Image 1 (cartoon, rainbow, N blue to C red):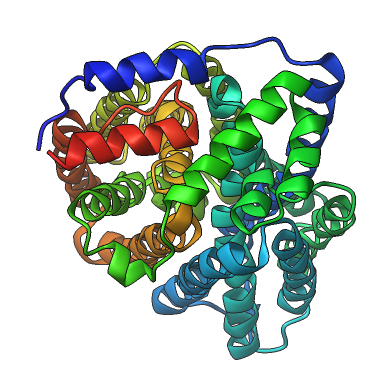
Image 2 (cartoon, rainbow, N blue to C red):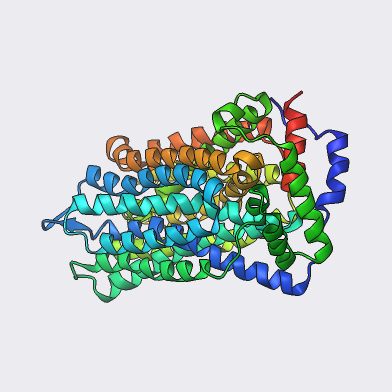
Length: 478
């Protein structure tokens, strides 16, 4: 299966539906507010996955530090929850809608963060982290899907990747909070608990924010609530574009036959698109990004930094992630998804090779910690500027409308299970074979990811969701 140009008929169809159009300034402002409020789910996703890198070195129960196995279990318990949450919430979102589900996830975020902070035993911590993962996984699916269904085609890339910006901003906030608390109360046994409880604050904003934003207009129209869907579109489009888009969605729905996901996957073109989505999800995690996000402090300590230096160094990783995401958002408005993803994967793979080589060749030298830090920063520049934004964006737009929630949920399930594998095995691999071979292993996988994207990934930029579905049907049915 190769990436070939789209059929001429499909390309012609694009011109009338996806060309940029002037929005009412009030509609733009309203859509921007909705995006900011919804992406507090991404902020929580980022904080709750990033905070653990600073909390782990301080975490202890029964007056002893955690073993490598316990560290892997604490980290991966959230990831197991995220895998289940993404799968369940994708299906719930298809049945019950997007907005209310995000509000419910805010409640889970709040309660689970509080329980994590006050966990008396490692068993309670693991259970609370699993519950927190349910919310993280649900937000990872529902928020970008909600944004993709609200955004006009010409601005979908920028709006959906606002969520990625909030994710990395959440991670940066976690790294800063970790370093500040460690500096202010370095000897306090409960400092890690304070790091964890901060996550409850954005959850409050997310909950109340969901009370004032609209439901997805596409979900409303696809569930027979045309007038409500049109009313939402009129708030985020000009009148003419709102009516035209609502009619396009309704015509698309009238042609669609609702069947269960497994039945849909029996259709060859849908199955091929679905498999591509699963492979995109795996690629994003197998780059090894979360080995740095979850264990970045330990990596920097092993390279030669002391604990406080490693915590400060992790802030540099967070800063470059935020800056790179800004660059990625700008590039998505100018580049196709495929070339941007290929560029990002080449950059991350090269960085992994260099980390492995430096760890082997410069072991024990004063230069090693600074070389490793510069290479992790370079890795994250490519990952967060290209690989991660394109992954979440394509997963939000590539699946057919009638199975979008369930298919996105399954793809996210695979993504999070791959994340579990990386998060759980990384400390074991480093302990067993060392840092250099571990990063070389990630680099080999990166080469395979570049080949997959070059050969198999379709381009999705600049199409309405309905036009994109028609193109993929025509392309993969041949």
